[in-house]
Image 1 (cartoon, rainbow, N blue to C red):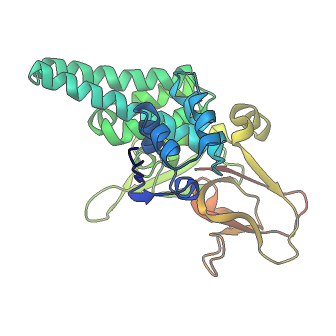
Image 2 (image 1 turned 180 degrees about the vertical axis):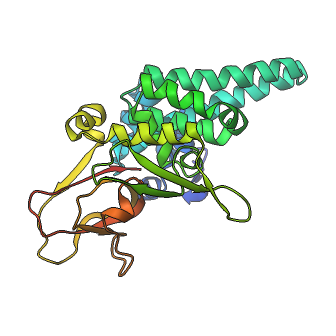
Length: 319
């Protein structure tokens, strides 16, 4: 009788020998590949995980997102559902790009075809954002893909993209200003806000030259920035626009710091009332007041909050 040869999977660059190893190193791209080529099923079989194997073999859907959801449930992976969904879309984009590159090789890298497909790929992402204007996971994945793979087209069309999304998918505006590169196109590096509610009357300046000379923000950038400020001016409208993606905290902390969000997750501050303070979670010093945060869309690693008011509300989003 032939001896069963046990083998390891490699997930996130680490050898996987047990279910615990698989859960600890669960990476969507790796696990889905193993599922599709049946290596995951073989591994479960030779390792004696018959009950888990039966569940995996019971997955009948061909939709990648649904496959991921079922695998996450089977292996009881403890992760944020939005993050899982976002990473699944990124995985799909990478697979599509891989197939496209293989097609380029078959065609001998015809320049015209590459250029046309490059523009087409960019527009597909923009349309995907508009068609899924309330799905933040899909928007985050598409925005990341634009930033990573289409920087030239973004540089040429970031103004047009802004106003297109402002009208058709305003949630995407917030996602873009979460992005380290994209936010530079829409936010001034130095900002003066004339009222604490972030009304549209803003005096803007940016440090645009290589020698750090201060220059006046261009008119179109001022318009884009004021449009962003206008989105958060009214909390009721903002709540309707962002839905569950808007996070709110209110409560007096009696002069102590309250750990509203733990570190190792990033959050963007949208609005905080005067007299209150935030800082990176667990970081002594670096206290930020409303003048430091409002209109700056500051991104923090976790959130500590201090307030003497029961009614003041801190508005923020997970990055």
